[in-house]
Length: 359
Image (cartoon, rainbow, N blue to C red; front, side, top):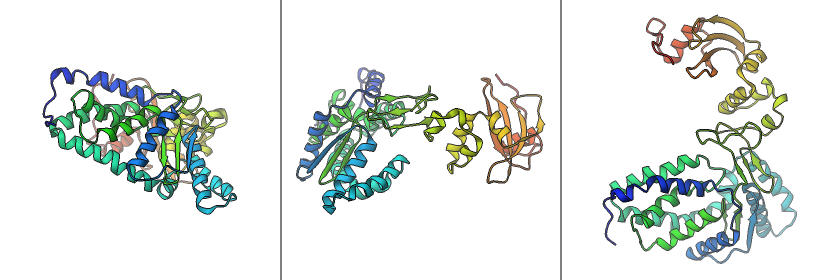
């Protein structure tokens, strides 16, 4: 086919509509069409020269798919039913903690990589070869990146819908029809019909879509009253403005305390916990003392407190132009709010300048 080297104004006018369509696909909470997904996945097995897998699982969530698929794989390999409990305990702990790398790498990567090389890589290579660099970059930025940002998470929905949106735009709007089109149709069918897919030579596990996806105003996974993502089999995940948090921080929020929050090793998770508690409760919980307070709330009030298991820290409590209050950890050496502000900006107190305009 002739190389596509430009996008007409009429074609460019479809960017917004195309992006919205594929974000909707990526965030769909409709039940999976397992028949369609299974048929597409089996086409992929055939494409890479593999026999139909001995076990095909249709599961209610990614957790169930990883757990059930890994148990099936281990039982086929070992031929022992007693392996079930061991795998369930090991994989359950990994998936429950969202540490999927070991299971993914050891059990599922081999076939996934074969499918990826034959389907995703070859389709992508042909699209780039038959589309001019400027056109490819423009569609990449206007379609794929926008859909990726619009979906905004890797846990719920068809997170690879951005790839589907990109190639489908090339096909349906720009007229691309390369020899690898049939391979892309496998991928497109999976994106449109189900959630996650786990590939193995003898086991295929397909996950349902989420039943619920809750997000904040910027598209990050978030819910203050329940799970951010919930599946029909009962498995769920909890997030606070995009940060994964323990389930009980929301379900038993009234009993959450500073000690629980600071037990977490991850700094982003601790910060989310502090925001859930509210910084007034956090400062009270670490017995923080007021060191200095500027007359301007946007400059803030400086506190000093002892974080459990750590040295004394400074905390600058400020109010932004929207009226929201938040706390910024600062160097313990700061003794005034202005010193803390200078430290945050990386300048000396002498060179620090009070903002002239604040709304």
